[in-house]
Image (cartoon, rainbow, N blue to C red; front, side):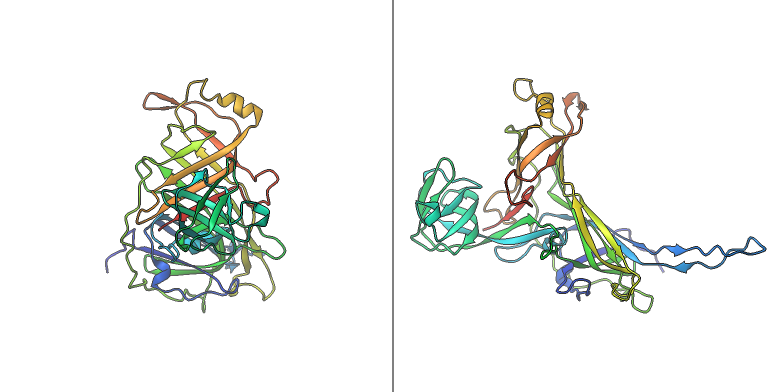
Amino acid sequence: MPGFNTRDRQVGVKVEASVGVAETLTAAEFRGNLKDVEAIPNIPKYERALDHATLSKDAALTGPASLTVKFTAEAVGGGIASPAPWEDALLGCGFKSTQLKVITIGSITGTIKRGDTIGNNVSQGSATKTGTVVAVVAGKIYYVPVLSAFISSDNIFGYGSPTGSCTASGAPTNAGRRFNLVSRQAAVEPQSCTVQCYQHGQMHTGAGHRGTVKFSYKHGEPLMLMFEFQGPIKLTSGTSPSSSPITGIAALGVPPKVARGFPLTSNGITPITTSLEVDVANVLTLRPTTADNDVYGSGYLDTTITDRQPKATLDPEKPALATTDFQLINTAGTTFPLFTQVGALGDTNGAFILESPCAQFQGDYGEGDRNGMVTVPHDLKLCGVPGGAGDDELIFDHVVG
């Protein structure tokens, strides 16, 4: 019998209806352009070390069982109303999703821009329909619905600075998703997932998993989402439930856009950089238990996200001091927005927008060398907005339509 191809791997993720109760995954959950798939079971042994007259060792006892699953997904797929194939994985990493809308408009008087609140009354306090602007292009406003729904012929007012106004010429339609962070609180818990990974003839299944994710932008490559999940392993009579690969997985058929020629701003300038990595850096905590409330006899409850330390890493060329004084910014503790976009509004695959409203230099920085050009590699701490409601240090939009 021949051996296995090293890339003979699949992974599927599905949000659980009940925490720690494994979902049944189908080919639909295994869609996606994936690579670097890896399943790592962790089943430690208890070494007994009993006293003997000889040096012979006693058989060890099997301890609790957990599973780590890693994979990288191209940012591709998902339609006007349908979720992208990586959406459940992102929800399992401490995000929530909101349906975006787009409405056609006439010409804008004044200014309406990303981040502005819009409403149907010149006075924001009197508006009965409101939303938060995601993007504005000729004849369209993409937005997050907040209160009620706009209709055709509504007068729409922008409450930013400066203000603006326009008139809706059509009803709103679906236009992708916004992803915001969620913290574990008394009545709120990031969603848990069932994760399955077929790897070289063996299907590994985990339930009650949560994860962390990095967004990776590199010159000439597509936007990548790098996931790592951790949680209890599901064993049935001491074996995994299946050893067969999933069949009938539909191809996505949409090529991703590479990180080239799209907007990127940090501290109000456009850096000359070859990479941007945004790491949510969730702290994943296994929850051991000796009681029978564990997940499938694993010895663990569902994994919990107990902290996060989001940061961005860039490697820009060093600009003239008059343009940017990195030392001064670092010393002063200045905060500033970070924004990037891959893909254009109207593309088949949509536009991916990642924004941190409040970034700050983190730690020391030095100088590097990229093909003879001086670079200033550095990390940015992604902070909560001062005076904000929290969970606002990172926004990820997938805008389609």
